[in-house]
Amino acid sequence: LKLLWAPIVDAIFSKKIGRRKSWVVPIQTLAGLLMVGGSNFVEQQLGLESSGMAEEGIKTAMDPASMNVKGVTIFFFALYFLMATQDIAVDGWALTMLSKKNRGRGPVMNSIGQNIGYFLSFVGFLALNDAESSETLWRPLFGLKSRPGEGFISLGGFMKVMGIFMLIVTTLVALFKKESSTDVSFVDDGTTGGKITDIGSKEKQEDDEIDAAEIGIKETYRRLWAVCQLPAVQSLFLILLTYRLPTSLSDNVKFLKAVEFGLPKTTTALLSPTLILPLGILVPIIGAKVWHGNPLRQFMTAYKVRVLLVPLLDILMLFVVKERESTSLVLFWFAIVASTAGQAIVNSLQFNAQMTFFASRVDPSIGGTYMTLLNTAANLGGTWPSPVTMYLVGMLTVPPTCSGVPEVCVGGRDSYVPIQAILSVLGCAWIFFLGQRVHKLAELPDDSWRTDIQRTNNNDVAEENGLSRKPDKKNSTKRE
Image (cartoon, rainbow, N blue to C red; front, side, top):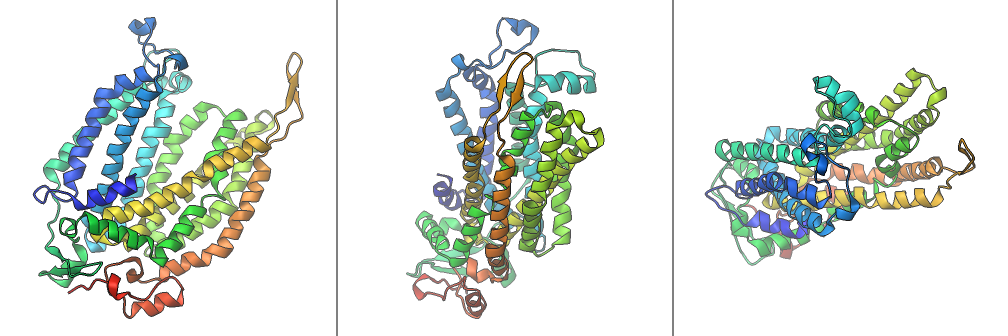
């Protein structure tokens, strides 16, 4: 749905307000108001209302019988729709907000921002909402009185705080951030791409976006379809849809298995602010300096570590957690920190490389739509392996037989290590067969990623890699 909605966001806007601000300001305002006004509604629909203990400020646990799935679904569908629309507009704005020489820094900021957002909304919230962590860590840290059974912050309270923060940021953007105007216009010359005219300089043509209001919705959809037919984009789709399968056990099962083996929630709560968040901020900055101008080399270097080394660290961590009573404290913390840091580093490096490559290749004329297309493929590639891997873990795991008092468990078979071995072999095969394709993508000229430029001399380079096509007179657009 987001992909189908993106061309509309790209093509319809108010010139007076700005192409991206026309969507970002009202959408973020609505989302902020929805979170502030709907916070209590969400708790009610989830069965998290305060009971008779409300006077004492203690929330009851979730009551499945009082949960209204329909109400929760409607609320979060509306919120996700708003934020998906905002994401399209921001992706497109990021392509032209910075000057050309600073454009490579945009994905670094994107990566840092997403890491901070992920930390606050997922890991951070779970740590602050957990009653045990709140009682043993957060309240003593801030000198607050004991409140057994209650998290440091409730879901409703968290949504209100984030909603207010969003409204403040949106107000600042509306008042102080201006979009640069464009002198680029589109003329329909009877071809698929049309013709672009600009009275400005050549440098300005490269930095400005095409006026999508002149292109129109129909032309934007047509260009989106043309982008999907580009051999370079199809090759990128293949990479994005497959590379996460060999790492899916680490991504989706590792920490669940660690908790099953007895890893305390207070430990994960401690790792979040002290390790995961700092790495999420520092790694993209360092990676951009080390691999400057070579995002796909950064991508492949991180992937090799992710496939070959991180699984070994994960297995070591699970072993010491399971055998904690007979493991030294130094080895216990080394294994946990090494596994957590290793995964955080390679995740950050690959995400930053991916966003940098996207931003350097997309056609700004349909910037939001193009970025949405590539991000949708990347998100799908990270989503579909999760249920597959979890199904395999559940199907191949044999639980132990427990009996007696005290309870003694014998037998059983854990499937984590065998599945990880198979996935690691798949990862090595992926590197061998598709690694060269990644390097070929990096060598393709910009023309191979666009449908609106006449391909001339650069075609020979692309054809040597087998990832480009000759220009079609019916589907080419000339720049004047």
